[in-house]
Each structure stands twice: as structure tokens, then as C-alpha cells.
Length: 187
Image (cartoon, rainbow, N blue to C red):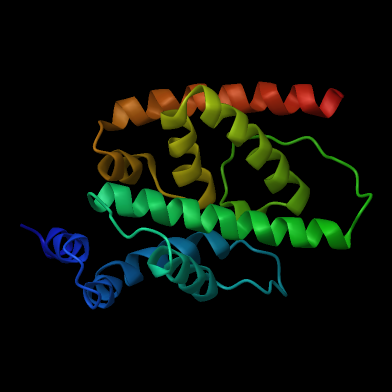
């Protein structure tokens, strides 16, 4: 049994202090992912990788359920927390710039959401919500790829599927999101 699994078992058994043991196991990995993706952020960026990881951690260990079944479930929850943080940040920036025009988005070159303009992040999030209603697994792959920048190999490990499966779902989801956003931009 891995240390991660042991700590998850303790959390599920109600051990309040076990969440404190989980942080050292995942912090460095989450911070590396955030730092790597945010390195391309524009100068003067107010959101730092450490802040993103800390905010996500607070949400993960806050009032919501901490019943993670596996390492994949935990990282999926982390991806969702980071996605929500980035969406809230994008909405706040968008409110400051009301009336800004929409722009065409290419999903060919994937970057973490923090690198994209707020309107783009919001448009992708809206399309992602529609995708989640149709195919939750593909939506989960998009969240992990786009919002926290996991590689296809890392997503496969986290979700407990093969890498070719992730590649197929990513390709289909990316094409669907592109078509959906293209339709929305025409409106």
C-alpha cells in the first residue's frame, strides 16, 4: 500500500489530521505543474503558482467532502478546484473589462487556462459544461489537460485508463469544443 493510499484510508476513516499528512505528498507535484504552466504568463501576473496550489488545497480540504477513492480521484478533485479558481479569476477580470470583444480560440496548442484571456477561459468553461452534460469522462480529461496542464500520460494514470484512451477522448473533446465555440462565436 502506497503512502498516498494509506493517508486516503485514514481520511476516509475520519482522521482529521490525515489531511495534513497528504499535503507533503502532493504539494510539490501540484506546485511543479502550476509553475511549469504559468511560466508563460504575461509579466505582471498577479496569480502565482504557489497561490493557485494553496487556494486549491484550501478548497480541497475545506467544508466539502474529503472522501477521495484514489490518487486519480484526488487529482481530478484538484483539477476541478483549480478550474474553478481560474474561472472565478477570469470572471473577475472580465467584469473589469465589460464590453470587450470575443476572439477566435484555437485548441490546437493547449495551455493552462491562466495563460489565456479571461473571455477565452469563460467561453471554454461554458462549452465544457455543455460537454460534461453529454460526456462527463471527456469533460474530466479536458479539465485535467486544460485547467491544470497534466500530460496525457499523467491523466491516464490519474483516471486509471490507458494513455491511448486518453488521447482518443482528448482528440474528440478538443474537436467538439472547437466546433461548439466556433458556433458560439458566430452568434
